[in-house]
Amino acid sequence: MKIAILSRKRTLYSTSRLKEAAIHRGHRALVLDTLRFAIDLEQGSPQLYYRGKALSSYDAIIPRIGASITFYGLSVVRQFEQMGVYSANDSVAISRSRDKLRAMQTLSRHDIGIPPTAFVRDKKDVLPAIERVGGAPVVIKVLEGAQGVGVILAETNKIAEAIIETMHGAKQNVLIQKFIKESRGRDIRAIVVGDRVAAAMRRRAAGDEFRSNVHRGGKTEKVTLDAEYERTAIRAAQIIGLRVAGVDILESDDGPQVMEVNSSPGLQGIESTTGIDVAGAILEDIEHQVLFPEVDLKQRLRLAAGYVIAEFPVHNMPRLEGKPLRDTPLAESDVHVIHINRNRSIIPNPKGDVVIQTGDWLLCYGPSMELRQLTPPPQKKSKTRKPSGRKDDS
Image 1 (tube, rainbow, N blue to C red):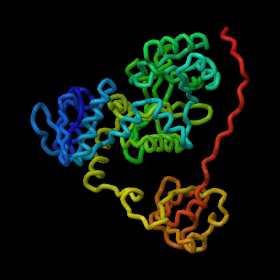
Image 2 (image 1 turned 45 degrees about the horizontal axis):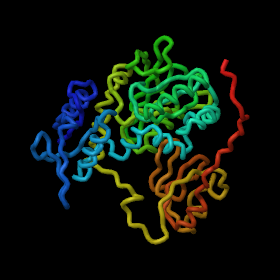
Image 3 (image 1 turned 135 degrees about the horizontal axis):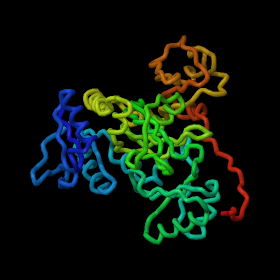
Image 4 (image 1 turned 180 degrees about the horizontal axis):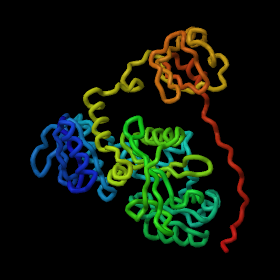
């Protein structure tokens, strides 16, 4: 394959490792400066120019879009997509991950742990928002930032109010987030590639610093994730829509809390800490996607009228649990089980003697009315009413 790595600087560790891994796997790889592209829009013929010349054909791109060039970088990635070139991460997913508010909004719809977070603009709403996330200390984050820049720990309500007011005065939008005390100065960075965690490490902040980023002097150690943390990392990347992602997870008393999902994770820290060839894993995933593309059933099948594809968990379903597939009411309802996801293993096209177990996830094709009855409605979380009034800042 011919692969373009979109990066401002070819000597960066991540950029050079991706090129090295591509060449090692027999591909031709070129590093192209994202800002040197020109985009031409013409009916039926999207085109890119690089350094003034029409761009030759490529099979895939690996976007390494820095925060400072997000807008133009995404425009270039979209143009490659319009030209039919595969992108390791698509433009919509990169955009979704780059905006911290949008990412948290997207994650909040799903059953996945996130720190309580608030977003306000009116000065009068600041203190109530701080109270709703649990009160000071709180973490204040600018919506676009990287490597710990624009992340501040406010120890008291008054300090938090002053910081937010200053940020708003500088035309900066910020998030107010609960400070997970038990994880102070420590988090997990998991690199998700495709549908698996390729590598993971624990990061510890240096000294009194609460941010654990390696660029801020944090120390790292290799870690093997348990099933819950691994599942959370993969699910968070999938929800945002990224095939390659750095998922930052806080270790809280309530379990894993996703703090951020990064579309251009650095490779130096994770590779040097774990000894795992993460760049090679990314190239392997690109090979599978370009040479053996997966079919998205929900998008590409022309479904019969009134029929849908749906996935649902088996829980509190006496008509299904503990019974062979042939003895369940699914077949008589014209519902076909495409596969069963059981403990992260897939049973494709299960036969009639396969016994349905509690905790299975069934991917089914059938009449929408029948599947709607099987799919559990979203659960509304009950919120405990917090006492009004200001907390003591002393």
